[in-house]
Length: 98
Image (cartoon, rainbow, N blue to C red; front, side, top):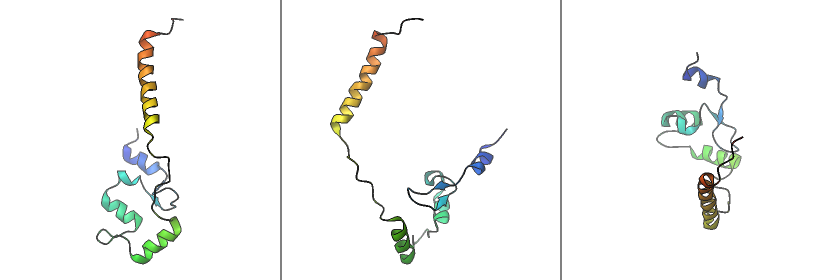
C-alpha cells in the first residue's frame, strides 16, 4: 500500500508556468509560499533581483494573458439553455428498455 508521500515522490516535476522550463516539485498552488519562493529562486522579502527579472523577461517574455475572445454573453446563454434542455429532455424522453 502506498502513501501520499510516496506517490508525490514518484511524480515528475511540474512546469511552473506555460513555456517555462524551470520546474517545481508540485503545482505552485499546492506548495507553501516559502517552498515556491525557494524553488523559483526568489527572495521572500525583495522578490527577484533586477538582473534576474530582466533575464527572466528576456527568456520567458512578459507575464501577459493570451488575447482570447473574452467573455461572450451570447455563447454563455446558449450553453445554459442547452444544459437546461438536457435536464428537461431526460425525464420527458426516457430511453426505451432493451
